[in-house]
Each structure stands twice: as C-alpha cells, then as structure tokens.
Length: 408
Ligand code: DAS
Image (cartoon, rainbow, N blue to C red; front, side, top):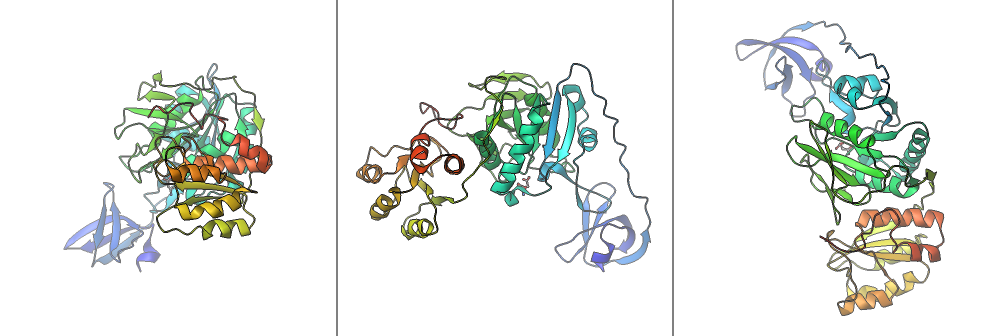
C-alpha cells in the first residue's frame, strides 16, 4: 500500500493523533511521512484518513539577464549529489540542470558571472567511464572557445579521476573547475550552494588549468581550489573530503566574501593554448599490491593485451621479491609504473634491495604521483604515444602531476 501512496499528500490517524504530510519511500517497512516541518516520521501502524490532491509545484525561476562586464561562464552538468534535490512533494530525488534552476538555488551566482548551463549526463559518478571523460573533454573544449571559464558539476566519488583525465586531455588557457557536493541541496548541512558559488569565483579568476573546488574545512568558511592532478577524495562523508596530496591547494576562496588567497604556483590565464588530445588507451590497469598477492595478476592482464601497468606498491614503492621475474618479462614490451599506497611522499626504489631489483627489472618510479593519476596519465600517454615514448614521458612532469621536490 505504501508504494502506491509514495509522493502523495495524505492525512493519517496514528497514535491517537492526526498527521498530514507526503508519503516518502521507505526501506524499513514502516510508513514514512515527511511532515510540513521537513522531518520524516515513521509509523508501524496507521489508518489512512484521506489522500489529498495537491497542485504540481512549479518553482518560480528567475529570468536570467546577462550583466555587462560580468564574465560568461558555462556550467556543464554531469549529475551527482550536487545536481540533485529531494522533491518534498514526491520524495523523489529530482535533478536541477538548467541555468535558471541552478541560479534559482544560488541567486548570488548571477553577481559573480553570467551563466548558461548544459546537461551532459545525469549519472552518479561511480558510473562514469573513460568514454564519458572523452565526451566531457570535447564539450569543455567547445565551451572554452566562447566562455571565460567552465564549471563542471559532478558526483564526488570519482571527480578526481575525471579532473585528472581532463587535465591530460585538455590544455586550457582558462579555468575549468570541477565541483560537487557531499550533501544534497535539500539538507540543512548542504555544501552544494557554497561549493558552486566558490567554483564560479574560481572560474572567473586568473587560473589556466583544470581544478577541483570543494569545502576546505567542515565549516562554511572557505573552499579550496585544488590542481586536478594533485587532489583526491579522502573521506566518505566529510564536506572537506577533498585534499591536495603532495601539493598545496592552488587557492583558498573565503566564504561568503569570495576573497581569493593564492597558496601555490598555478598556470595563469592565457599561459597555455587551447588544445584537445582526447585519445585514451583502455588497456591500462592499476593493481594495489598486498602481502601474498600473486604476480599471476600481471600475467593475466599481459595475456589480455594490456601494455600499461600502474602498481600501488608498499612504502617507498615495493612489491614482493617473488614478483621480480614476472616484472622483468612484462617490462620488455609494457610500461610499468610504481606508485605508493602511502599516497603522501615520493617513491624511491633506490634505498632497499627490493627496490633496486624492481628498477633493474625495468619498472619506472612514479615520483610523487597519486596512483589513480598515474593510471590516467598512462592511459593518455599510450593513447597518444608508443610504449617507448610513454616510458620516457611518464616520469616527466607534464601538467603539474609531479612536483620537482617533496615538500610534504
Ligand atoms: N554517488 C556519489 C557520486 O555521484 C554522490 C555524490 O557524492 O555526488 O559520486
């Protein structure tokens, strides 16, 4: 019965009282009602008094008028929590994409820039694939030709993968800013509006690279702008889940003043030309080593035609010494890059015997690259260069993914 009533406004009798609200989806078997005060109440027993008919809610959307002197920014939506809100009437998670809908949620946006919006996908980011990265890169490339910056709203789970992918595929003279939310806009603790506003500010600033803009602390006091190849989601739920790793954030944007404090080096606006190199080799694999893992996994992927391997090794970049023979064989016709599951610090295989044997087998040190960034860099290199050229280029810094020295 609950299912049929979901989304409807009803009046029920329970615990000797009358309650009115919207029937919400329930996963507990209880009957869940969202009351007008926004709280959900569950009932094991109830008596349906009546189903109330309500007019479909039509939000008043603002008329977006371009303001002279404000930069034109494109918002490309791909989905995720930031693009969603619970529709109280129906309990469904609806998505908001048009510029008008976004601007109606964050009216301050129109004080920072002129926005036009495009819906590319409506997917949660765990479902993003390399084909989506390529299509997204092409849409951003096109938008950069007639906008001063591009904002990409994206799910948080794999946002740093997408940001890294566009960092290698797209050379940009203007800001490209990925932004997500850990809490949807219907919740009091939502970070969506603040993240989006700070991202819009970043998209109008003197930045010429792909970045990620998210909360810098658990409070609503500032956001960080992170380099797209030095950032990672490091917490399942905190609003400051995104951290720069082995680098400082590029900038701190104060909220609500939107004051900008530069924290580290950056590509400046106009420093690089607009270029797109959108081929990616899919047969590249990231393997997290753990004690007892057999090197058969290398043989398996090699037999399937993979010629790109990133290993997330232990400590300074190690795997079990019984991997050495297989590594030597695979390195003959493949690129094998060693990164560290410590994430912080730099791989150095010249300290211990194991590391020296790994280097002699032909494995390449991944410096201070994050494992997933090395994976995407190798997908891009092997999509555009030979194995031999990729072996040379993977250890060189291309877009800021490798810092010259280890500061952290
Ligand atoms: N599932 C998450 C995603 O789409 C929701 C979010 O965090 O945006 O990445």
